[in-house]
Image 1 (cartoon, rainbow, N blue to C red):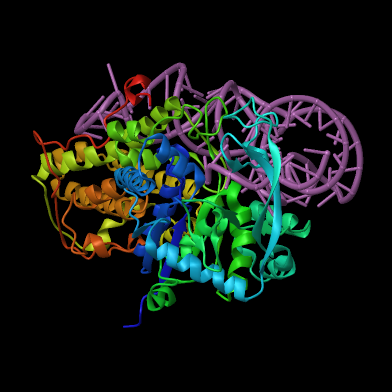
Image 2: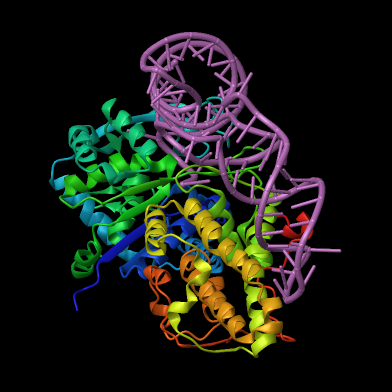
Length: 524
RNA sequence: UGCGCCGUGGAGCAGCGGCUAGCUCGCCAGGCUCAUAACCUGGAGGUCGUAGGUUCGAUUCCUACCGGCGCAACCA
């Protein structure tokens, strides 16, 4: 047996100064689907997430609450993980950048870049608010003033800081984009970055002076490492850079960084330049996903009175939540969220099609044969499929899922498997057939059982809980844990098909009870 | 201002050089009754933002314009 191929996938780390919202959930779910899919494809997957804690805002927020920063970030990390768990986001590791493993790695990294001659000291000039006692960036300002202290006039102050020689890497970055067209995905993001880098890069300030919270610069104890130079490093420190070389060698470079489209520049320009400077290999791909907007066209974010993911999950479950975003919003582009649309999609695709297919199939098996469909040749269970090469079709779906085209993949699964199964029932009319021909009715139901099995495999990365229910509705020889995407193209070896679903009064409980009124979805 | 995106039947989206422009919801008619009043079949409804251009041929490529929007170095 050869070693299974490895797949290292990451998401952006989040600021823990407020709770996760729908937009961040979108990213994590998209990455989780990929991680689950790759596991099914036989990869040994490492799925990395975390929180970005070494920022001034975090220590400010902790101070507001009268908490020690470390205690505050630990508590927030717990809250974030609760949400990810509730959404069935199955990460393998969750790093907090206040952890020692990150600090140690950061210091080793910045020293390496320093030794490579890419860090120099220079005066940094920026507006400074005496009220906050900190430097501001243009974006922090509201009408040229500090939003927290609008009466005060901002002073332009100078501070000696360390800069990273990003400008020196423009040519090498462009050469890399050229040689590795798949490095930045989707295509539109790539074009943006290429033109950005062509237009020239400036060196970036990477340290700050006199901060109590943050990672010390090893060659200058007065300074701490500033934002991106610290945050990006989580991708390597989490897998052991600076603390566990053997583990680091096993996982780095990452196969894909899943991030929001607004931070592609940091991941596609700054990050690879940093790695080049430190002499480390570059990640294979950066995927910049789109944003989720609410009905009034605003970005779903912390500030806009956004819907709390948990309110939806509590009522409808993680799978319904995941389905909505993966089906409705193209991962590479933008999408919309509204409760009306959520209810519409939920009722149509999950309740009426998916859930009802399960109900009617299971109910007939129980009612007509007490769950025992008898023995049959597996090859006779492919009749529900319709014509065409099913193996090719499954390969197309694999390709779609593997390239993050989740919405298209789900549409095709519904159109060509779930609808086909419902149509098969209409054509073979088992509920009439049972009156005159029980034997062929068994055959029809065995086909439907097989269809449920195929559905289970195909939706496994997207709706893990529902998928397992579907699979375990019948006793299949092949263990659920080991099932691969390609197994959907093959009929199960099982000869004797037997119902195993939970029944109440001879029927299964609805997997997705219909949403009767939009109000059911609840507000944040 | 710079860079980029979008404008397709009532609503939301696919299509991105060429068979009668697809899909979901909604609407209308029929079928069926196993099932979560679900499922199946059929139908009505679009001169693909506007004006030019390239081409044998454009929703699909190019230009301009109109309308909506995003990003621009610490909101995924």
